[in-house]
Image (cartoon, rainbow, N blue to C red; front, side):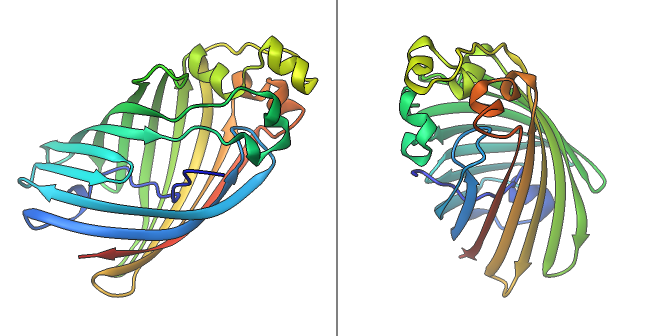
Length: 255
């Protein structure tokens, strides 16, 4: 396994929910996650997660975030509306995580550009976005639309729940679960060519508890149910599952 990231669904930048001082702020996160070995796998792998983030608030409307996984710029158009543009590192797939992947071509690491738009409706955040592979390494184009809601919010504890639907072009779908003639010969699975369209529905639950003003612990969970383009692939239908889950826990230090 390689390139694990902590499961943390943080759809909006910090300033959307909480006022913050102008200038630099920093955070370090460390933890672990448990996830499927590939999209639609019923084999799970566990590993560490780590991230360092540096945020710079230019104003109450604009913020820049730098992290080990890329860079993000957020701009608040109105008190209720925000747009984000980010450049993100997207890890490839480690074929050593599952025996069935030994017959497949390696999935390369890449960089993706992402654009999102959010709007708040009271305790609800509604958003839509697009994500494009910049290096042409098979991740293609992905779109998504979702909603996030604050379930519980106190001075130190926050619980949020969310749901989002994702869509992908044929390039993305086939990189994830397509089976070429060579892969079919190596694995014994039937050849499969996926169409673009609906990919999955994901439900998320995130909890964050502030131990002190600068130290928090968090836990995240998600369940993803795949549509036919993914679920009908023999890689998923015969070797995996059309419903998968992920879990993550960690601690965050702000300074």
